[in-house]
Length: 275
Length: 245
Image (cartoon, rainbow over all chains, first blue to last red; front, side):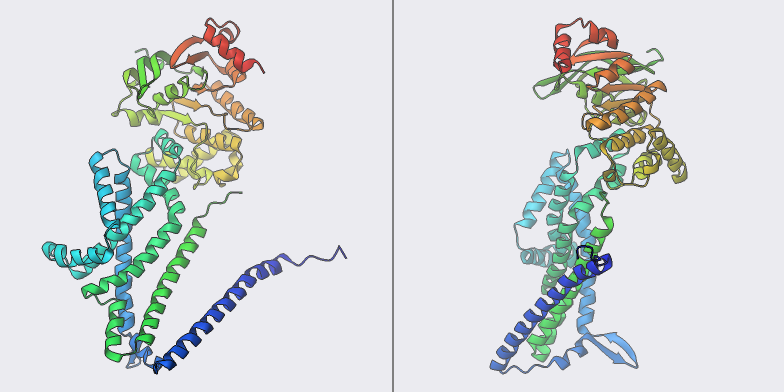
């Protein structure tokens, strides 16, 4: 009895992966069904007429056999543009601020500190209004630029603190090893310090990227035709808030899930073997 | 300055705030010399060795390294000529062993990748670790990591190699392999300054031993003389403490 052949390794592995996936799917199905039932009975009580069939026309349309994106997908494109440019600016602002905050210069430290505290302790919406109605016109900024600037200034303050935590977590010996090998400061940061910082702060950085995408919906207050603005316009035209807002939420969810997935893949790829 | 002097301290003082870490240090090190620095913890021996490549700044006096005064202007050149091996190895954990070795030669000496790889593999072979080039530091034992760190310093072809307690973080069974490599380097004529508690190594390899206490150089003598007939009571006390077991 004891000498029974053990199951082969691939089988065990497959079961190990399958089990959580199946149980996860079951849970999702259960929750979705509950939600669906709740919504449906609520909508019935309100006499709400579901018109899901009208949603696809706001995603895309076909003309002469060619596909074109309709309002929602065009809005998504704007959201993606703002988020992508915003993310790059956020990283630059965050890293610069973190380095300034850790520098020897008193003025640099003071500037970085004031910027972080100012941004963290005022609401994003108020910052956007300030930029859009005050600084934008004064400096002659375009709407898109203002939107990107507002978002990356906001997110940059949080990212700066993440970078600072990451930089502080690098052992002093890594800096010293770089110095004693004669590496320049730039080379030390580029090849030795930052690659290690990025590996450590990837999880909180992903949070920031995801919240940047979500926060980008707030720029809809400044007449930018992003996903949220398009959604609001369609609701105003069609009076079907349930279907439209669920679709908009679903699209945001897809974007952020893809982002999280990419981050998880990156984390796995950058992982350094320890055995 | 005579040609074969590579390091000279003249009346060097160093303070950490109120704490007088180095008191009026005078010391010259000759090319090819093997110097061991010992002393109780907090005696300033690490601070002294770290001054030589500018990891610590001194407050007054004069320090010449490789014929140049150690100041901001010459710091980079001097660091290119002085290698350092640390107690905790300080390998770059996100890079393979080979990349650890080739980074500085490629960036600062502008070597091509092929050239740097060849050089790195040579030095890895010299520290008896040639087959580990593609592993990551965390995959190696402590002794192997320290030998990689030595090879990394050697790749910059330094004139002087500084060792800051290179075996203090190692398990006992790995100390020997590191000391063996250091001995081989010494026999090849490398100028070495070692802070270490390995008295057996000092006896075998060192030309002179420096004994420090409370930021001062108490005594400098050849190992046999310093260990067997120390002329200072503080040296005697220290030796009694570390040799009593």
